[in-house]
Amino acid sequence: MSTTDSTAARPVPEPSQPSLKRAIGPKLLILFVIGDILGTGIYATTGKVAGKVGGALWLPFVIGFVVAILTAASYVELVGKYPRAAGAALYTQKAFKVPFLTFIVAFMVMCSGLSSASAAARAFSGDYLDELTAGVLPPTLIAILFIVALAALNLRGVSESVKTNVVLTLVELTGLLIILGIGAYAVLTGSGEPSRLTEFEAGGTGFALMTGILGATALGFFAFVGFEDSVNMAEETKDPTRTFPKAIFIGVTVTGTIYVLVALVSSLLVDTKTLAGSSGPLLEVVKAGGIDFPHKLFALIALFAVANSALINIMMASRLCYGMANERILPKAMGRVLERRRTPVVGIVFVSLLAIGLVSTGEIEGLGDTTAFLLLCVFAVVNVAVLVLRKDRVEHEHFRTPTILPVLGAITALILASPLADRPANVYIRAGVLLLIGIALWGVNKAVLKARREE
Image 1: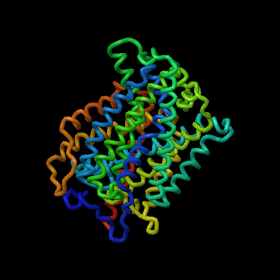
Image 2: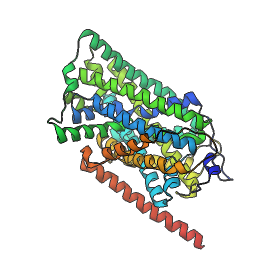
Image 3: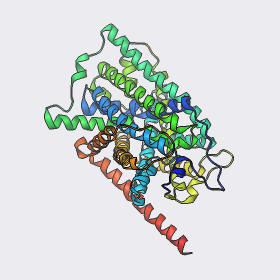
Image 4: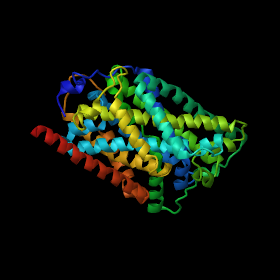
């Protein structure tokens, strides 16, 4: 990987490859970040978070918002400094210059995106779809066809994918605004149970309470992931150094505020047991809200929201493949661009096949928790990297975050990734298996490169 300032400031594609198209402006990027964060997490895992923390459902989302802002500040500095695809992998290599660590970080990011897309596919075929079809369609088949359709959209072009993302983002925002409207009506009419807002499922005090809250926050953090994906669109964004700071901070703040309000409304109107038992918890809120809003219409809105999450995760994973191929972390063929559409065709096909494989490996909660765990580990590395790279100067101006923010970001990410978060053992097992697969791929790639040098 090159560490020179000139290559950091501008991507250098293969001479035989067309460059990616810069089609994303400031407004599109803000909506892209919001759409990237919103989706499966809030629509499908809110109930599972309630099952861990109880009626005080809002607290994990407040803590998650703080952790997200801390790490977002590091990403903003780094994407402004090095406006290239590859994101965390690029920052890790520049900071530590250890190719194996770079590969593992990149692989963890890719796996987090694919496990997130798989969780979205599972959510798509869950309670929201059942509201429309009465459960007559095979869930696994629907999830696979759903991923194939999103892959086809990604192949068509980044402009089409991002514009579709804008439409779906507006739809999912509408769904959350409906929830907030129902909550406002409940408050004005005296409905709901305000006492639930201070109840903790974990019970007790001290250590038991702390681990219960951390466990709920770790799972709830799945709702905040996504802002880090947007940096992989740096080569397709107009003036990324100036555009990204505003887009990421606005995106995280808007979504964090909405999440806390939705959590308050959900706990106010629906008891913890009902929320925890549903893969469509916000539909339960609509049903309990006292407003005659069509349940099937809200279910359809939720399906669009979940589809948006999968669309973006597949898009980001494919761009990560493209970036890593250009940095020689993955084979050169992974960076192949479809000349007419100027999209990373091999990367899109590769990650889509992996996502289809992951659909059958777990349920929404387990896949979501795995996504959060993998990214929290990556976030810890990125927060340290931004401090290490302070010594690396670049010629262009860029955003610089206060030093205390990445320090706190690394500490909070490590705490939420640790056993203190009281996550199930199968999450660590799934992540460990994924890392073993990554190590195996690393060995194969090294062997191939060595053989080519010896020819």
